[in-house]
Image (spheres, each protein chain N blue to C red):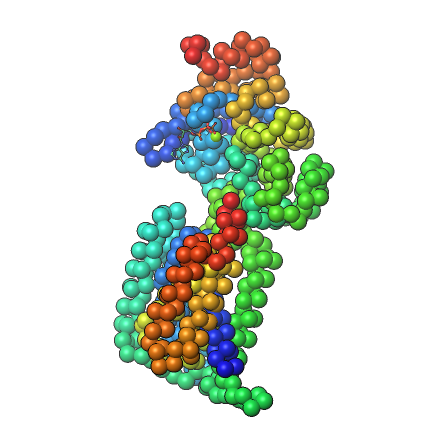
Length: 239
Length: 290
Ligand SMILES: Nc1ncnc2c1ncn2[C@@H]1O[C@H](COP(=O)(O)OP(=O)(O)OP(=O)(O)O)[C@@H](O)[C@H]1O
Ligand SMILES: [Mg+2]
């Protein structure tokens, strides 16, 4: 059953339109990829979904409920969390303070302890650095913190905007292994990546977003086919 | 000599409270709320108008009135300005300030209203042959207690954590579930309560409340938050303290030349800002803003 659905979404800034009718779906436990070049509108798409960028048309459904136009602080409580581009952790606050802030978005306050324990199992390094200033963590640790901070809200849908940004290949693999585990636990995971190959092999479906439109959708099998991938990514015009 | 130091510390404490109120609102909204002055003024009027009540009741009244007024300001004037550029917001806050002064003038008249509030504080006592004013000691105790309470609130409570997070990156805080309306309203209410404390100390020292009663201290507290570093609450409070204490000491040191106290204080302020353009605590502040 479809847990999360974006239908014909339009968005932009001021006089500029950026997204021209974007659709996508994700079911429980699915991992979905979105790839595309710089400026394609990937971050704008996520911003519109979570309510930080105004929508100009279309709708977003979470478990059948229309959440379009709601405020960010309400959307997270409905079970949709975003790990924003560039991580955006609070560098001046400690690791545990960052995680505590993540608890703000929970629907049920009873599960707080359990949520923190789950984070401990998934990202033990955050527990060892519990009281350190978050800004002093390495890039990989900061990315783990950003993911953990979103996870403690127990999202049903988790959006990640370029989680590989600025990380070395081994750290990237580490982070993606956790994301697979998170999806396997039942969360729908949607990952935006500029480096397409990172997600195409893992994702159930990978959408190619270019110039504000979904240009193509690839399955895992398609993605294994280099030629097909390149054609989808760069368009058939032979750019 | 000892009295001069006590006076400096107590005036510094009061200015620290005023600066903290301004800093809290600035933190969550990037708004320099010039109309903080009118919160102090309305709290002062409330103290004067309720002077026949027991002191504690009168103080509670003034805290409630100032907090309510702050809440209304936020709702009516500042809510739709969220995210506007700071200059626009500053201008609007000037407008709110002037408008409220006019309202006070219509309600209470342009001439000062006075009443003796907490007269027991106006006396003095001697310790080891040194005469000390009660007001300075009470003020210091009050300022220390409230600064400690604020420190606890900001550093140890959930609300404080949200205030700090929002001050550094409001959008991300909202993404995590921090309710923006509620948080900003809380910041205003607390700043109103702080204004009432400042009002109390001021009314005891000078029970002549007119529509511009809160202006001077607010302007100096604004200087304070710039001196201390407006991006951190600690900086705001420290800057307010320095401005108040320096001004008080200058008044003693300059003796008959005390008409120049303001000039000298601004010389000191300019020197500090030349050395540390972002304010004394700016180094910590930039870290928080990453
Ligand atoms: N706050 C903003 N105001 C105005 N225009 C914006 C804003 N943010 C993004 N844009 C514009 O919207 C378009 C899409 O930007 P967006 O950040 O969504 O791209 P992206 O696919 O995430 O790119 P990247 O891979 O570089 O992160 C770009 O042309 C960009 O200039
Ligand atoms: Mg982006």
